[in-house]
Length: 103
Image (cartoon, rainbow, N blue to C red; front, side, top):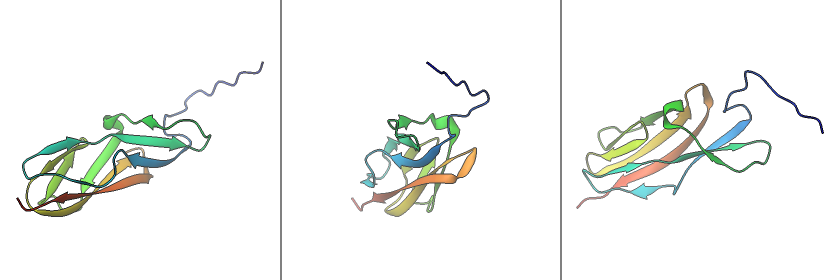
């Protein structure tokens, strides 16, 4: 048996994509939802939950909904796109569309 130990490896080494569980969703005004973000590696291993502290979140329309720390909070009626990005590798991200319908 040969075992290879790589020192200094980061959890995001080999990650090729992120995915936000459940995809696009509707969220009532003044409600919130915690996102779950999964990473997929290039080695065929099972996707794994990414620690929220390792991600940066942004909303394309923060007047509609904010996304701090992965917690999406609906503020007003409309639609926004929330992007989750690996903080240490901004080339890998995932998007989800959040719709806040009129009551």
